[in-house]
Length: 468
View: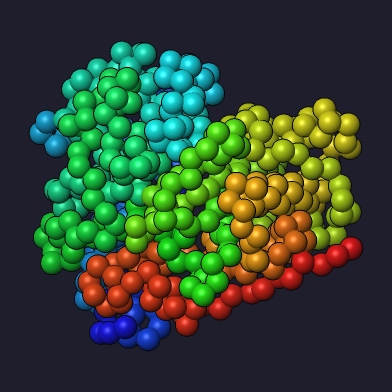
């Protein structure tokens, strides 16, 4: 590790965005949030879109605030996966980007039927989710969306936002890998798949690896680094794993829960397809073998409904209520698509319990306990699937992201999975973004050095499994 510097991470999730400055002194890394802003889709005539002009305006404010306080070496952007923007021949935005929750299971099934599920998985190794970019573009083709022909370029969200800063258009590998349009073996676009959904391969552009410097923010000398643009890829980069331990799995816990492991090559099998596991790009030449689990979205939606009813619980208050609710109560299958975008999450949860012969939770504490125990049960099932698919007996589970703050969920997870849970860091996504910038500017030398820096800079909490 070498010289001190300050770098800036833009970390955009589905509900908020932040500009976080990383102060590196040569031995440790300190975080400073310099700007925070709301994010969410906007419904227009029954469809969901991202308000990217407002997002970019907020990001410009974040960059100006950071630069006004100290010299900034570089910035990087990570976001959620799959969504992107159509760009015209004169660099103009052709309509607002669609939001991933706008796309249906029926549309996914129609595309899968047209191409063939086995063929699709054999080429891409990507899990089947209704919002994958392939399925989005298929719907655009079926609806004769003129943007498919008018667009000179399609850019994923972090790439498009970086383009707005720099005027340079590149497509970073980890965010592209979420699309279900890459050949998993060659790590390049699958041209036959692109053409099946009406896309000219030229519109997607050549891929670049995370850590590539892509110009500077216009009007400044702040370099733009294409970090691991998919937020989970950045989060996994910041997992504080010891390189001597090869038997760890990771869990990124937030609005979505995503569990997996790092691999050097894609793992593609019929069993993996049946269990809906995914091979997505990682930093440092790795792949992330993973599975999506619905996550704390269920709790966020319930909290929103309670707030609308005048019961404005904090998550800390909900956790305290859940801790006093009876253990071993009702559970649901959290990844059931009925929970994807229901009109009323509370009623959907209660209905799912009643339909399986369980008593429906009524109080806020009982509902939240149901969600947490259901998540822990889902985590244990996915960890067992990973063991079956890989033959690895995982000795620990690293939990990163906002969910790492939830002590009750962490303990329930350790109990259900039967392995120690190492919780933290909470800000893993922003940290991974910052680490990739430090690697790009030569301040640190590798992913392994970056993880050592995380271990030196941020504490973790260990939860041992308890037998009841």
